[in-house]
Image (cartoon, rainbow, N blue to C red; front, side, top):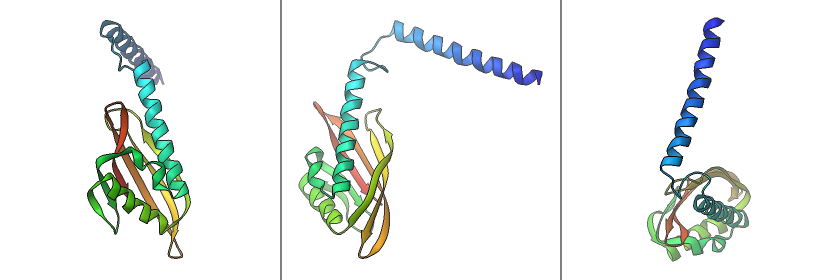
Length: 157
């Protein structure tokens, strides 16, 4: 029992010490890209908004809701379908055809990573295709280009 108390005390001390070290580094080397900075918060909000727009477009079965955010060349991978790099117009047509051949029952992004240079989101798409209930995983990633975020990859598998 005594060794458990010692281990817990060391763990708490170690966590506190690491936090103090991180705070000191933040004071010594301030950056606009640090956690909690205005720039970082603004970019996270923009990414979150983009993923919400994509989610609504998928639920509505309307790729036009988010196709304006496609990069000039976007990688699309649709299981038992097309895959490769396509122009934004080609990608829009491919994904719209996929949506039109299915009745979307539900979709929600369940995992979002809004940090880093290529934020991504994944979620489960449930739809009916030719009378059969179908489940697919959707993966979307984006990158910052100029003043805004663009979708560089869209996978349905």
